Length: 229
Image 1 (tube, rainbow, N blue to C red):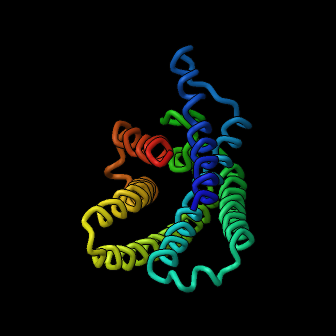
Image 2: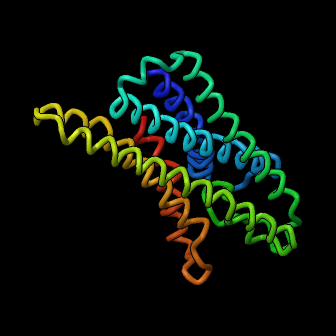
């Protein structure tokens, strides 16, 4: 558990450092400019760290399910090697997803200016600046990612339903409270992360307003890593 929490803390630190320092610097110097290369790097690291964190949260849900619901099988699993492999798979999946999205997005010709209406380089805002056919391919890639995200979220929820069923059988109220206080924050972070990202990516353009986009982006780019850390 502590090994996964260490990985999660590193991802959260990198995730929040990708957007917040640049946004604070721009705010202090009253300058909203970012280079094309800087924007590409920001998108790459944002998607990489976000994807890796979400994959790691899925792995942590599985680990906690085995710990609580199948404790007799937990000791038979290879310990540190299995943990390292699962953590590496989470990091690798996030990096692969980031490379695919970044390469596809920054092959788009920008034919509607170069002003991103956000405090960081965000995929939906960049897509608004393009009128290329690659836009459709990126939309398909986003839908594929959304399906995987939904599948992982269902897996996490089912795992925690099973965990809470076992926890409710604990005769001690103190034991139940301790278990819920340990696991509910994890589920809250996952729910906030998934709901805000899905809303930001899949909402119709008819309800896209700058103030709403700003709030949604803040909720998934700043709040989850700050809370989970």
